[in-house]
Length: 487
Image (cartoon, rainbow, N blue to C red; front, side):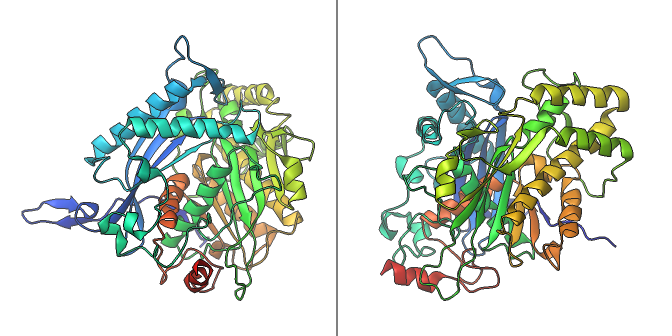
C-alpha cells in the first residue's frame, strides 16, 4: 500500500486521574513550561497556549483562541495608521494592542490558567508586512504586540531571556542548564541570517525562525530526524521559512548557518481564487472560510480539467531567486542585494509583480466554480498549492542546497490542509532527492506556536540531551560543545 505522509496534529495534553472519575490536566500538577504564542497574521490573530512537559520534552497545545485579523477595530480619530493587512485592513498601534490584549486574556480564561501565576513565557510574531517599506519597520509592529501583552498583565520578565538560572522560577531551575550555557541567539541549533549591515533580509524573518523551530519540535512526534541540514516552509497567507547548512560534527561551532530564505505569497493565492466564487467576502474572504485548515487522508487524482486549470494558474505565479534589484517580492519587503552579498539564496513566490495578478486569479476561481462546482475548485487549489511547494523545492535543489542528508518540513494552512500533503509527497518522491523520501519529509500543524514554545525553552536553556533538537541529522547532542563555548 502507498504510505501516508508524516502529518503531526496537536494531541490534547495528558490528564491524571484523581479518584471518583475525576481527571485533571497533567500541566496542573506536573512540571510544565507554559508558553503563549501571540501571532497576528494577515488572515488570523491567534493566542496559542502550549505546555511542554519538562520530564519528557513533549509539547502539547493547551488552548487556542483564534480571531480573524480583518475584524480588528477601525482606527479611532487621532490614531496613526502604520500598516495594513494583505487585503488592506488598516491597523494602528492602539488597535493591535487591544486585539492582542483581548485574545490573550480570553485564551487564558478559557484554559483556566493565570497569566500572572501559570504562564512562563510569551513570544510575539507577525506576518503583517505587506504595507511596510523595509524589513526593519517590523519593529514597530512587534512593539504593539508587546504592549498588548503588557496590557493583558504579562510581566516584562516573561518576554525576555533570563539573565541567569537564579532569575528563573524555582519550578524550572532543576530543568535548566542556564548555569552551564549562555544563550547566544541561536534557536534550535540555527544561527539567524544577518546581512553585512546587521539588517534582517526578510521582513517576516522571525516567523521563519519560529516555523523552523516548530517543525523541529513537531518532527519529534514522528520518525523523521528533522535536524540540520533542513528546509522549513511556512505556507500561511504569506510565505516564510529557512534553509540551514550542514555542520561538521567535529566543528567547534556546532550551530548551522541560514543559507536560504523563503518569502512572498502562499495562502494569499488560493484566497484570491475563492474570492471569485461569491461564496466569501469579496475583499477579505479567504480559502480558510470555505475549506477550513484540516488535513484529509487519501489521494487526489488530477483530472484533465484540473490539470488545465492548474497550468493556467501557475502561468501567473512567479517562483525564483529574488532579483537583487527588488526591495519587495510578493508584497513582502526584502533586502535581496544584502542576501546575495551574504551568500544566502532568497527564494520568492509572487503572482505577477507584488500580487498584480490577483484579479486574474479571482476570475479563474469564479470560472472554475461556475462551470465545475466546489469539488473541482477544491482539487484545483490542492494541486496549485502543492505545485507551489514543489517549485520552491526545485529552485532550492538547482541552487544545490538540498543535500541527500537534509529534511523538508511544511507548516501553514496552504501546505497541510486538504490533500496537499499527499500530492506534495508524490512530487518529492518523483524528484528523486532521497532514497526514502518518507523518512525526510514532515507536515506539522501550529508550527509557529510550537516554535514559540521551543524558542522559550532555548532562551531558558531547557533542552533534553537524551532527545536533542539541535545538532545534525543522525548526530549527537551538541550540549558539550555549547558548554565549552560558554566557558
